[in-house]
Length: 188
Image (cartoon, rainbow, N blue to C red):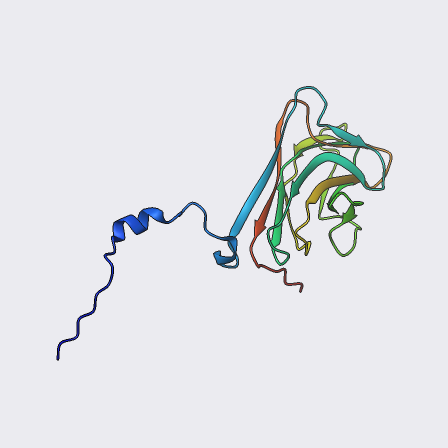
């Protein structure tokens, strides 16, 4: 007895052309892989991107970036490298990252606000205590939402009598947020 099986013709080349390789579904992307990056560029001439303060409480700067996570379980990587200026000696310039979810109030993303995520210290090396430089910012957050999240840099001067600045006139500066799928922060 002979058994015959018939199946429709299948053109593998045509089927491969039908696949959309540019659009992998987000749920098929493995954990730990970046899903999206949002970049804000501050390319402003003059002093429009400079924020100065002599306050010893945290003040909002102009640096911010907004991202809408695809997953609640994602890890957000926040990066910036703004120029800074300090005027005064033997003090600290603290920088902290705050967040606002869906247009709400800004709040610090860390556990305690004392020194923020980074502290810059300087001495009177130029005689006047005037220092210019770049502050590298690299912070991770798990906002646990798919609503728009805006991250903003805040800063302060610890002595409250000298001026600190984030941003520099005419400089090209950036702030970015990258969503990483299904990652987490391990606290030690």
